[in-house]
Image (cartoon, rainbow, N blue to C red; front, side, top):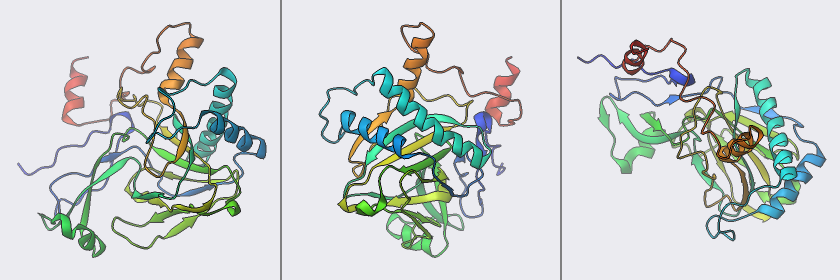
Amino acid sequence: SGVPPVPCIQGGKRHSESDLSHCPVLQSFVRCGPHHRAPITNVLDEGETEALHDIWWRYRDDLSWPRFEKKPEFDDDDYNTFRSIAQNVVDAMIAEYKEPMVLDQATISNTNHIGHPPHADNVQFDSVWWKGKKIRAEDEVLAAQDGAYVLWRSEKTSYRSYSCTVSLVDPNDYEGGEVQFFSKFGDKDSVEIHKCPQGCGIAFCGCQRNIHAVTGVRRGFRLQLLIWTRPPSVRVPDSQASVCYFRPGTGLGVWLTTSDMYKREARKRGREEPLQAWVPKDDDDGTCECEKCCVERKKL
């Protein structure tokens, strides 16, 4: 009857502000907030950056033309080193944002000349609207630049919350490779540019408030530690637990996936096969009033 449905907030979902005067569809949920970008200073020392460089050298692969038939398994020392260093970054992110989060995936990435175009990590661009009418695809960018309403939809990684990129090499050793942030979809000019010192990084949330890009590397060698987190109560989709983050600009990479961590946890507990997760579904704290959650709660 014209009344929008109550959005679901189960499992840490947070409803993005929607303007139904422009678009009849609600914005995608997110799992982040606060939304500011935060420098993470001296989070890794020289020994830790060298250790990750060494792991990258021995396990590196290009998923556009793989040299391994399947993802190589880390030996115990390499796994523990990679996992521990990644956790150091996550701990720094928790301290900054005052939000509970756990490591979802870590990647050591050698960015190539292609770089990454502007995108948001955990939501995907859907369409552009104005006063109830959907803008034609060929006019979307210009309309958004002029202030039209942009609709974002859920992404496969919408269960995640925050991201961080940490430099593993001296930024003077390469040209290009800058991390750029944009204020909104369609903007040509960035509002922030980061090229962090070795052992330092920039953290940010994965929603549309942090559209970002990485310029291609024109000369030299760029190596980054990329971190993605999720709220502790969120169940990782089966289809995402083993997925290795890869885009054409990723270059040679090494991946510590959710599946890797599940397998190690299973071994500690003496299990042959890993549990998918230690929570069977997104935790329900009883506060969500959407129709689906209310129906499920009545069954208990």
